[in-house]
Image 1 (cartoon, rainbow, N blue to C red):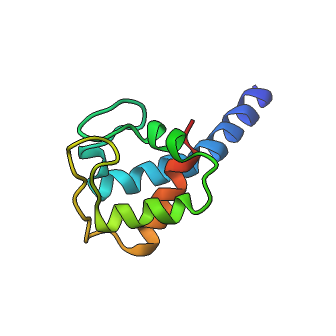
Image 2 (image 1 turned 90 degrees about the vertical axis):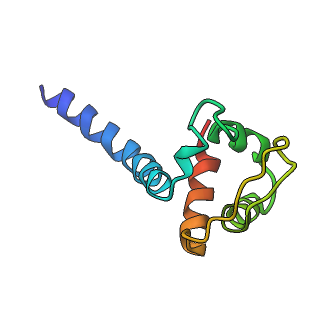
Length: 101
């Protein structure tokens, strides 16, 4: 029983930041066009993470795309600007996306 509780506590401690940032993505309507692991209107967050893995300045580039929008990188459907997302929130979202595998 004690081992089960320790395992559960460790799992929650590791998963909590991911859930918190997914909650931010949900609250900012990112999940209307994106999913963690499958393409919807836009690419999955895991595909974004794979594309930008290891690139210098990737988090800043993605944060800018979150707030200002973009087009042409993932096909013909543009990503609209997200004025409801602050610069700090965009950075947090970009950092989270880049951790997904």
